[in-house]
Length: 597
Image: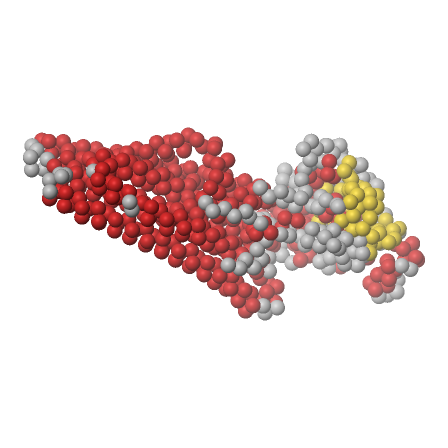
């Protein structure tokens, strides 16, 4: 089968496994709940034992039906009722413990998986679709829940029934049991052979489901763009294609499993019919009693049912093994950006001194293209530095390296003289506040979106930050004011309103280093002026890095650094750079139409 479109290296680099041993990856999640496991196993053993005792009672009833007294029959039927009560109690207890265990373990897996992927650097998401990660969080963990909460306990119960039933069969009639054993190899062969193919098909099916989820998530997140370019037919066709391939993969899996079930059940019951034919002749010949034959029949049916159930459960286990591998892969994925074993602490309060020393960097997806080439840059505490240049010159890369979303391949990036790689990311990032080019608005209220910058902030502090970012007026005008739900990705806001909320969030964070990546690009002239004034007030006593294409926003910076093709080609004040007549002067002439640069 061809690899699913968009399938990532994470998905394709798996080591093949031919058995359900991949489920051993669940062991760390099961270990804390040994009590539940032992309780469930005890209840399971009880129900299996009671089930195996029941045919003995039936045999006694049959053999003594005509010869025993009424009181003896009453005792037998009373014992059967007690056995039924014990079976009911054990089954209910097993269901409660096993289901509870499954829900607990899957909740732990989902939490561990989310914790793992949330902390991954952007390089991770360059190799895997977000929709595929969500598929593993939902679809794959649902399969694990089915296995832990049902399939494994049913499988163990049927194994006990198979072993116990075979023992009782041999005790009842060694001759007939020997004939039954001749059937076993014939049944096992299709289970093993077809089970391997079933596992591969299950794995492929899960891959296609993940690809389908990724395609859907990508299209829905860009629904307005899709509609604006009337791309709905092509997008629908692409989703339909991967969905149909997912269905075709599922159909192959279902067909293989159905065929395996048919073969196994037919072979089992055909063998039993043959054995019972011989048993019936032994009863007629007086070699065994009718009760013994009934007992043997019940045990034979029990064993046959156990084998048939195991053949079905085997398919579930194969499918869950593939899901487990996919989950374990994410849990064991090594991030290219990692905290040191013994991190240094950033001194508090941070001064905000920034250093780039001979930094060489290329993005993981474009290793042959240098985004930064030997960059040396020093930003003094409290200095406002603007980074300008053509698109792709390396300006935003400076901010991404300073946030340590990536590590440079050469040189080092420092904060207050300490290499970022020597500190824990969660430590030094507290000294940074970022306003990204594409502001992120969460599906929450406006107040909660601003408070994201500092979760412990009061309502008054949130509103003060909004005023400083020129956001208070439009937020107050919303139906519920600051408590208005903004919708997924802030769909009810304009681009400029989103940016002002992002700026308010950064203002509220009150960090010593402020990073602005095209922070005013979506604002109208009046809002831009208000935000510029707010940023100037905020910049006092702070280090500010401003990435901007609109040179009007950086004219008053302490220093302007001009980038071109990953290098610093000039730096200085606005007037001095214009007078030099280089790249900056050319950009200024293009932007200022009145001739005043």
